Length: 381
Ligand SMILES: Cc1cc2nc3c(=O)[nH]c(=O)nc-3n(C[C@H](O)[C@H](O)[C@H](O)COP(=O)(O)OP(=O)(O)OC[C@H]3O[C@@H](n4cnc5c(N)ncnc54)[C@H](O)[C@@H]3O)c2cc1C
Image (cartoon, rainbow, N blue to C red; front, side, top):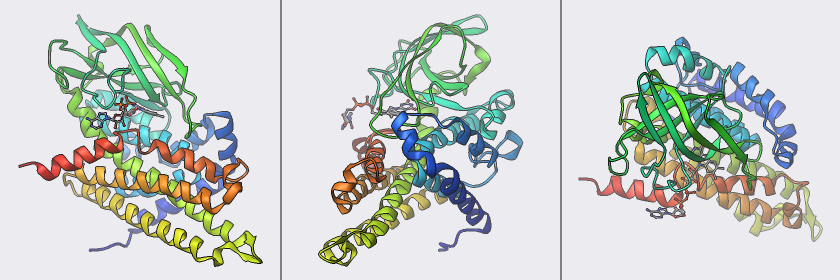
């Protein structure tokens, strides 16, 4: 067993840390306040190769491994978890399925631009009545000659307004039972009948945009179907294996930011004539946070390592995401507690971390769903 990152992994993590510290962290509070999309930062992430880290150079990516991806994403999320999710969606939910299921023609036309950061992608699976029960898709895609005609509504699409292309899911066989007869499509923003709804006013990760979509007789060329007809739900689920790894890394980054701020604040803040870090009650909180972060990080790294070694890692991704998201929420609460009343006001970043952390327990499968996934793996014959 070797816990030593390779030279390339160290280089990528350091590049991400430097960029996060110098370019992302300074504007994070303001972007949060104004719910402002970080256009320039996303462009620079593309230039650094961070928008398609594990994609081959041939298709516009950085051709690094998935461990490098989670290392970089942790660092970016440590500075601003909203930027983290923008990067995560593009890497995990858009570039990865295109890489695995796309035709060479689709890779040439879409993946090259998405993985290099020239364009941004979104992933539209959730519908108003198909959240956790994602197989209950109501959006339809009806074949008409060389095209499919899409009708339906999608909810909560991250990068939804800022993107250039979305991977959306629709029922091509309306008679098929839940989870069957679904196909995936690449739909370009601006296509006729493809409408972007209002921006959600979110609790956290506020610099990332999250919108609804409506498709009204939106015509998509048949060649834009991703994978085979009826294979959509399989693609969506396979995508979540890497998606959950990304969210695990995002959660570890948020938790680490909570610990960083708590350590420095507890050394500065004095009560009863001494820094509050001298109190055992504070020390125990810091110790628990550090231990839990390390455990979450190792779970995340192991799942990424398994992916890099071609091993099935559905359960391990779920474990990483579940554990990391729960300790991130806890770390957010503890960081505010350590900051006392100052933790509750915007002048200090920990209230933002606490708000940002919560989403990691909700998207790409709630914590309840992660427990179901883990239990199913344990009980499978
Ligand atoms: C900020 C944000 C960004 C998002 N980005 C995207 C995106 O880019 N693309 C996308 O497709 N979706 C996205 N989502 C959607 C997200 O993945 C869903 O919100 C999530 O899957 C939960 O679905 P729901 O909100 O409909 O909750 P529901 O499914 O209605 O769940 C409500 C509650 O019931 C529980 N529950 C449901 N079913 C079960 C069960 N079988 N057993 C036990 N408990 C259960 C849930 O765990 C939850 O606690 C995003 C959501 C948010 C808030």
